[in-house]
Image 1: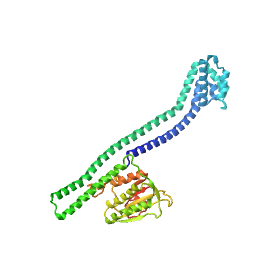
Image 2: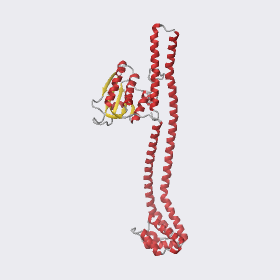
Image 3: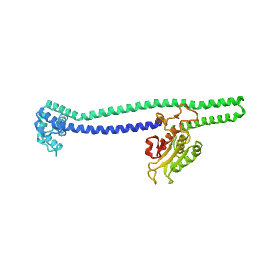
Image 4: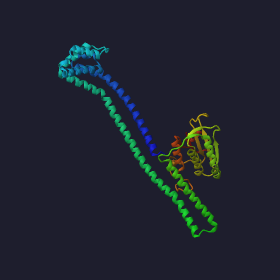
Length: 408
């Protein structure tokens, strides 16, 4: 389960990752295509342009870079001659400019200067030549144009996809909230009806004296049930509300799990179950809220007791990759009860999912696991359900059919 802020952060990270990944992919593809286009342009297109304009003196300038340098000089010379007639640029100065621009290129500067002179003397040819070179430039930037358009379209498509997912998630969240309200009403109405009926019977004096204690015990049990539902609901809403923060501190996770097992030992014995505890003797320190995190462990043990037949085996264990540091710490709560069938095993962390279609009042509130996974998320931990045959890789024992795994 994930709240709205958590989903938003996840979507933002997903979008940023997509944008960066797609940017570098498009950049690599465009660079490769541009490299091929430049080679083909230098090898085939520029010689054809030179022959078409009968500018054989330009053959020594056989690349787009040098061709654009010549065009720059032609345009700059024409502009200077038009705007500043007192500062006429002579062919000698053109040669000097070309010599400076093309120095070290191995070009025939004199031939290039002669070409510039011929072009400046024929304005129509100059204009056509310049347009042709602009056409070459357009060909060279075409990969970038297509790359930019493709990149923009894919990013826009991804944004629309995420928006659709957010809208669908919002609708599903509304449905879950409506279902939650319905389940709350159901879980409160049933014991309230029983309490009212028993109380009315007691008040009317129609209950035999030998049955009065039984009726009062039933009223107390149903009242405890209502209190449990309300308390769990308040905790669930509180954890999912804005502004609630856990208080992390350095705790020994081994000692915390050991205390949770001791706290639940009476319930385990009352249910006729047995428990196997495999916790290292040395401390393993983690950063966690001891109160909230102990609720997770206790909820998982209580879940194993309530939702399995009597006489099962429960295993609680803690493992770590390193004895000295809290690296890859895992907490296992396994049991030998029946496996959770599909699709219930995929919905087990949703609110008010108890595995009991009739929603009998003794089947739990259906909020313990959602609370547990929410607390784990707030710590940055993960909680998952693993069943046969995947459970075998944890080597907990062949008698266990399912395990809840907390990864710190």
